[in-house]
Every structure is written in structure tokens, then in C-alpha cells.
Amino acid sequence: MTFQKNILCIGAGYVGGPSMAMIACKCPQYQITVVDIDPKRIAAWNSDTLPIYEPGLDEIVKEVRGRNLFFSTQIEQGIQKADIIFVSVNTPTKTFGAGAGMAADLQYWERTALQIREVSQSPKIIVEKSTLPVKTALAMERILTATDNGVRFDVLSNPEFMAEGTGVRDLESPDRVLIGSRETPEGLRARDELVEIYANWVPRERIITSNIWSSELSKLVSNAFLAQRISSINAISSLCERTDADVTEVARAVGMDHRLGDKFLNASIGFGGSCFKKDILNLVYLCRQYGLDEVADYWEGVVRINDYQKERFILNMLGAMFNTLAGKRICLFGFAFKADTGDTRESPAISVSRRLVEERAELVITDPQALPNAERDLADIREGISFVEDPCEAAAGCDAIAVITEWDLYASLEFKKIYETMRKPAFIFDGRNILDHESLFRIGFNVFPIGKPPLTHF
Ligand SMILES: NC(=O)c1ccc[n+]([C@@H]2O[C@H](COP(=O)([O-])OP(=O)(O)OC[C@H]3O[C@@H](n4cnc5c(N)ncnc54)[C@H](O)[C@@H]3O)[C@@H](O)[C@H]2O)c1
View 1 (cartoon, protein in one colour):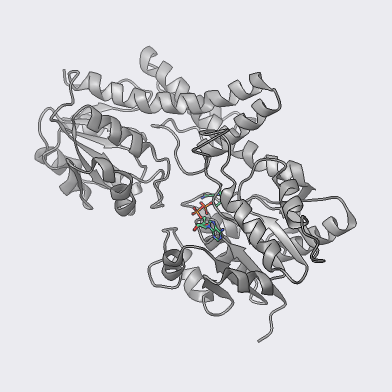
View 2 (cartoon, protein in one colour; view 1 turned 180 degrees about the vertical axis):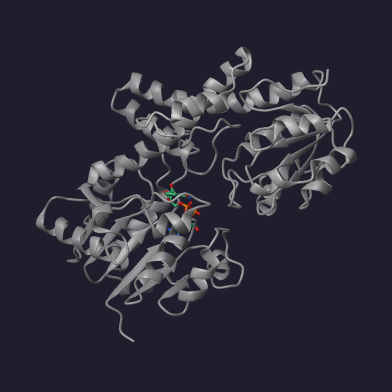
């Protein structure tokens, strides 16, 4: 069968895999190949156990894999054949040199740009899907045209807005698809080609276009605004705990103002995930580079409050459990950075675990999807930590349960039975406010929610 377009995606991660599976599913007329430098990841995409857990993804991949979606390690061949290349390699925070701890590390991205230039023999549209600092497209254009091999490249920005855990739904029915291009005739032609792909399933009014710099910046700003809402309500949660106000009631009252809306107003232990922190720090770094220190300080505060919230959680535990955690057994309910994913990158669970071990507590960690990642994240302090899949078994013999991830299953456990197997006094620290605190208190637990008065028996 001949396909209308040959699409390549470089980077088979949390974004590349699901987003290309969705295009393949909605556009059987296109051939899509996803390549990666990591052969293990590609082998997993070609197996029955996909490398990432995302509700609904298995079904889609099974439907399209081998039909018009292919996973491969043959990057050069893929580049040569492709008309359109999505680049969705990782862009983590730099850990060395200038901008360490703040700026985006663009080494993976640059390697890709060089490779595209080296092996291309026909014109290509290059689509930035990774989240990148504003003006990266200019650097991409400069690399691609640095040697004149007569091949035309048009660079577009098409940031991905899907969220892990709801990735399939977000990709199938996105709030918007954003495509940024140069405003030259060639740039606009390339933009129209990408619009045509999404128009196969996304309503035309949800496909928005902009200049390429606005598009790059919009992704950073979008994540900064989302994280800012979490830090805003978390900052208020600490005030609620001091004043006997209830953060859930405050959030409800605030969120019913239609100008604000009710999303992202759940107080919690703090945000995690591979993107929020890195993208805000990236924004902060950009602002500092342009001499906008006040603006940089403003956004940096979002990350500072998030760190404060995690430390506050530990200090609350310490205070409630008579100022010592040494030798106490604490069970973490959840390790993933959010529900419905196995991803633990930047999960609050990591810093909470490290702090608890520092306080000489013994840890039992349970999570329905994230235990292999948890074991890797804590490999250096693994001694004294147990990993147990069943939450009831995990809690047995513990002094406290700390809810870290908002998995639905935790709200429906038989806490009466769990209470009986725990040491007394038994504590619950609900870092996500997902449990029924009154009923836990009636069972006998001392309950410490976020941003509400604790319910204690002493
Ligand atoms: N994870 C999310 O929810 C999410 C959402 C929106 C945007 N993003 C952005 O998308 C980008 C990718 O994120 P991710 O979570 O999918 O990362 P990831 O680490 O899961 O995947 C990136 C993949 O790229 C591969 N890779 C790196 N260099 C390569 C090269 N030169 N050639 C081929 N493959 C290469 C890696 O091996 C890896 O498998 C990042 O910029 C991120 O900020 C992520």
C-alpha cells in the first residue's frame, strides 16, 4: 500500500509514542514511524508490555502497530524517507555548566538537528514537539542550513499539551492544537500541511496558528500558569492550617467564580512530573537572560512554594508523631507523580522518601503502577525500604500512612481492617485530601489532611 505522507517522530517517550499512535489511529492514509536511540524502549513499544502506562493506550497501539505505525531504531533511514519529522526528544534541566539547574539541556535536541541535516536528501518539514526555550526554532534553522546541501527545511513549533494519565483523551479531543510558523509563504505552506494532518479529527476552530515564537513561549507559559494555580492553593493551605479554615471550602468558593474556574485548585503535597518544574525554571532563566529579574523572581516563587509544601508535609508528620520518626514504620500510598501513570519523574514521593529516611524512618512503598520506577529512583537508599504491591499488606505493622498519589483505589480500601493491623497510635497524613477523614477518625486514626484542622484523639 502507498501512503499519502511519510511521518517520522524522533523520540519514543511519553509524548512521541502516544501522540504518534493517535495520528496513526486517526489517519490510516499516513505511514508513521517512531524512532529512538534506546533499543530497549523500541523493543518495549513492539512488545505486549508498552514502556509507559497510559489508560487506553494499549488498545490504540494494538490496533495500529504494523498497519501504519512502526517503531524502529533505524533513525537515518527514517529521516531519509520522511516528509515530516516530529522531534520529541527529552529536554531536561541542565545539570552542568552555565544555566545548570535552570536552563533546558538542548544536547539531545541538537544531536537530532545535526543528524537530520547530515542524512536528508529531500525537503522536510521539521516540527518541534518537545518543549523548548523561545527562539529555539531559530537555532534549529541555523543548524539545518549551516551547510548548503541544497535541501529545504521548514521549521514549525507544535508544542504538546497532553497530560499524562489523561493522555489518550487529551490527544483525541484536545482543547487546542497550536502550530507556530514563520510568516513567509514557505512557512505558511508548511503550517497548512500540519494543519491538514490534525484536521483529520480535530475540529478546525481548535487548531490555532501563531507566529513561531508565540507558539514556543505559549507552552512554557501554559505550564507555568497551571503550576502557579497549584502553588497558589498550596500556599493558602498552610494559612488554613493555622487559622482553622478549610482549604477545600475556600477552593470551592474561589473556584465557583467563573472568571477563575474550579480546575487545579486541589491543595496537595505539591506538583511533580517531568515538566512543570523544568519548564518554569526554563522560563525563569529566559527572563533573567533578558534582564527581567523581577519577572524571574515572580515565577521562581511557584517552585519555591512547591518545595516548601513538601517540607511542610514532613515537618507536620514529625510534629504530629511526637517529634521523632526514628524507627517508625511509614507506609507511602502511591509513588507516581499523579494518578493513572507509572511516571515518577520529579514525584513528591522521591523527596518525601529521602527526607523520611534522613529522619531514620523505615519505609514501605506501595503503588499500582510505579514500583519498578520507585525502586530505581531510590536505588542508593534502598536499604530499609520495602516495596509492596498490595496497599493493605503494605500498611500492616506501620505507624503511619502517608497518601502521596491520588489513586482512586485508596479511597475505597477497608480502613477498619487496615487500622487493626497497624501499630497504635495510628496516623494518616492525607497529602491529596482524597480520603473520608471523619470516618477514618471514627475508626481510631489520627488524621492530618492538607489545609484543614487535624482530627486527633489526644
Ligand atoms: N511527559 C509529558 O507529559 C510531556 C507533555 C508535553 C510536552 N512534553 C515535552 O516533550 C518532550 C519529550 O518528553 P517525554 O516525556 O516524552 O520524554 P522521554 O524522556 O519520555 O522521551 C524522550 C525520548 O527521546 C529519546 N531520544 C533522546 N535523544 C535522541 C536522539 N538523538 N535520537 C533519537 N531519540 C532520542 C530518548 O531515548 C527518549 O526515549 C520534552 O521536551 C517534554 O518537555 C512532555
